[in-house]
Image 1 (cartoon, rainbow, N blue to C red):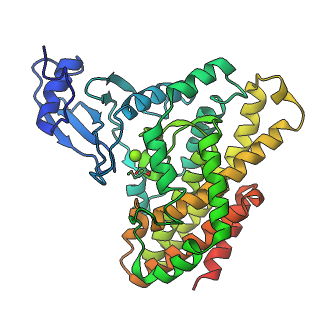
Image 2: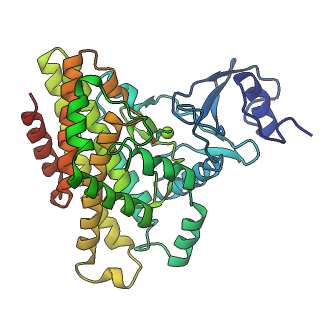
Image 3: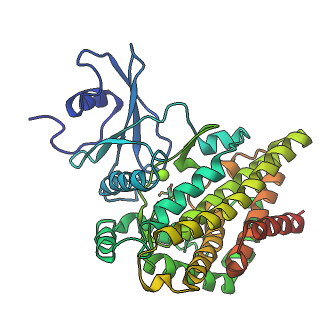
Length: 408
Ligand code: SR1
Ligand code: MG
């Protein structure tokens, strides 16, 4: 019998004993120290350190309610989904996700590699750090983990088994509400609208029926297109990075959905970094350097994704009909349209919805923050309304430049 034989939410002082019982990672007599380090909206994350050797690991436990709101109950099955997808992603995109040492279905806890020497990407971007390998790494991760889990490549029965195993209703419901619905109709009264932009948001988001229609189409695409095993929450807080290497983690929102969801999330969150740099860097040369790098990176992500996708498709396609001439171009076209649409939805929801991003909320000057939000919303509407026109990186750069020029 062990006190970890039935579920309870651990505190930092429970975790060393838990780790000793579950793994022989640390020597038996090691002096272990543990701190809760999570700052996400959902889970508890602990770092355990051997004081003498400095060896560390991470324990991540799923609670039964979210951290952002005790009213939001969530299935702890998300921990199983996360551990399982990390295994699959490690197979298709080796080295780009942390290693899972153990998943414990009773405590709904995962013991995993500590991504030492890496920083949460959003934190680094808020300090205006540039990451020269990011576009290369993230596009390898996305093309491999996304394309190789589709019906284009994977045996259709195996894929359907995956669809079953990754049914993730509670977390999908969060995205259906927070990404696809509430930013347009605030029926749960939990949007965070920056007061100076209240009239702008009312006019541009709440009262724009044509926009609601496109968001509704994208919502049903999210719910009904079981295309690929997606990460489901691929923002810059789900990435740990340094100058040479990238780790993607935290895929608890994973399910079989449209792959443009992941690509669009990355693009939207990179632009938030641009907004923060543009509003807060005082030195003009430094600002041009950082913001220029962000724009180049957005362009590069789209173009590298397209190029790698085409190569990987040709190398890996197994479905007889998907080999038909013209199919690759049609299929990729649908992914790119989803990408632009979702970049728009993620941009809007992180600006006016329940879960905002520090890149915007920490802009100290009120006027500059209001301007940044208006740029994001203007750009996002272009992404959504004209999504089939976004076919390459230069299309994104042009849309960004147009939105920036439009807002004074
Ligand atoms: C209630 S959870 C709010 C948001 O945090 C996660 O990172 C997801 O993006 C979710 O939408
Ligand atoms: Mg997360």
